[in-house]
Length: 327
Image (cartoon, rainbow, N blue to C red; front, side):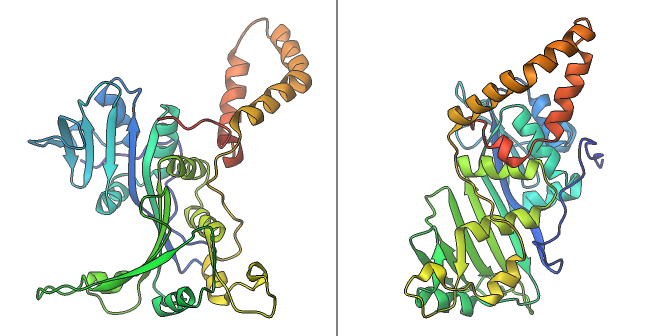
């Protein structure tokens, strides 16, 4: 039975940054609902009915029970405080796309239940060949890179069986142990396919995954957000006469790939001070108007409920970033 997508928001689009020839997609999603008191509530969050899952013989990840629908897994019955954990691998994300594809709605519902994302990956697929692995690796060797990461590395793998594919090279920026890492690799070679298919992946964990999900919960522009994060963390540059590398021009092929997007920061702000400023501004500027409306409506809170609901729909990432990340 195919599930009807929740109606609270449209599905996240599968378009690229600014270049519509690029395809962007969620490629891994894992989150925990620690305050959830029922499996039914979890199923309502992901939008897939219980009868579409099967119970596995064993649990996993420290949980005693595991339910699966293909590559979408639910883990429950863990130690006190562990809550319920949901994990979608890359294939699981494609299965979620075929079920509802409503990523924005998923992110909103997880945050509404104070959920915590432990991992969230976004990928941009280039099938036109806007740049090559060789160009990127050459920039790495020449140190013609401007990045928030201290190091980059490359790995090569070879498949010894007769099965086509699986050979390939991957370029990494950032540590696998950190909360953010960028990978660029030949997806066509991995799949044993002819033609051009270069994938650039952004892997976010823990706090960075939470903040990325906050951005995606208020925007359908998946490609633009992914490109904005890449732009904030990594740039390939052209040597110039200036002794300061930070003033060297960005390589045209990288600029074309990212498009004209703003940088998207996945940084942690000073929460207490920022929230205090909002509170003080509300007291000074809004409190008299709210008191007047309260008297006018004679204690009827319907208008205020509608006001809060409307305000919640208009929240931007800069607003959500003030909230503390749970978990």
